[in-house]
Image (tube, rainbow, N blue to C red):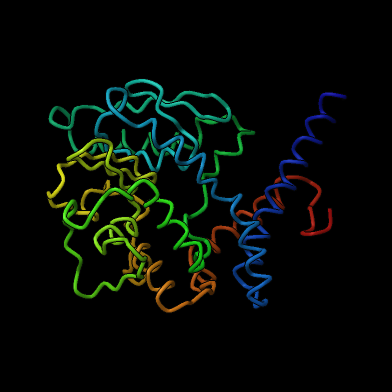
Length: 297
């Protein structure tokens, strides 16, 4: 009896936390509060996408423990799976293991290969312990749009180690339709590269080092060589991900800075994330005999 009671209490606590989180997301997307209140809510929403943890996980997907696989590291990281050895990942929360072994596509039929791939995607959820908070996956990277200040702070941070780099050291083709903010003493090419999510530094004379936290790419080139800040990202990198209107996140950030649009978009209110959130809340409400009313407990 005591065990059942303790289990019930634990389930209630988990349910309450999940319900509160879902309600906060839903209420945020539909609110019409002032910009000041929106900023406060935006700060509270940072907990939904723990970028520090994501960056830590994504950096585990490097050779020699990780090689090219049809399952993207981003998908695995969204569910808390970190690479621990070849073809094996481990949840950072519940410490369960998941095999990412896929059959040789040259030796099996497409249906067999596709079935194996689908099985791994399903196990990203089911391989967790039932109480693991990461089994539901992480929310989108951009539930809310960053402010102009946040965008510029990010660019400045990525340029913090590039003070020795001069205009002739880096070549990058800037599209004619891309407008950039001005930073005194910083070449336009460097601003463009940093806006696309790259940290830039000169570890030794004659060479440049580029690194992206969102896809963990690290590249070194000789000074004066051309660098493509878009195509050098991993294909699944959130920095080049496009929204419903076909606009990449880096371009959206630049538009926010140049147009000083420190607003929160409402386009998510009718999108699949909110529909899924409502469905999840309904499922939570029916999962226990006692329905937890939002903002009541």
